[in-house]
Amino acid sequence: MTGIRTHEQKITFSEMRAFGVRDVLIYCVVRCSRHIEVNADDWPENVRLSDVSSRASPVHACGKKGADVRPKFSQAKMGVRS
Image (cartoon, rainbow, N blue to C red; front, side):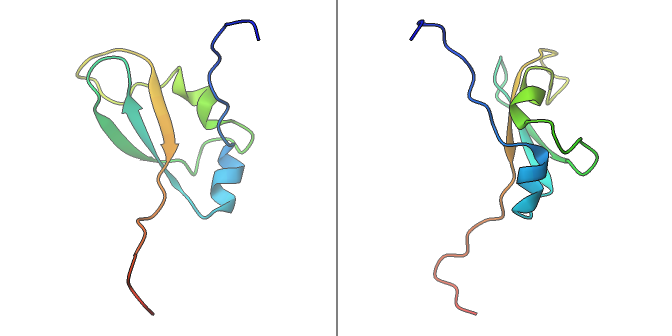
């Protein structure tokens, strides 16, 4: 190990869509900790969510680049029987 920290590679948009997930949550990790929800249907299949993270800016309030992009999985319905 070289001691250099690397960012974890996240799944591709294609892999995310295979799980039925269409939207992502983009969190500002630089300054303000705000987030937005974005539909990811138009993003290329082979791009990884981690590739988008360094270029994303979730809000205009702080004006900084750098974000954490995560799939928006549906909420679990624990205790609910169908």
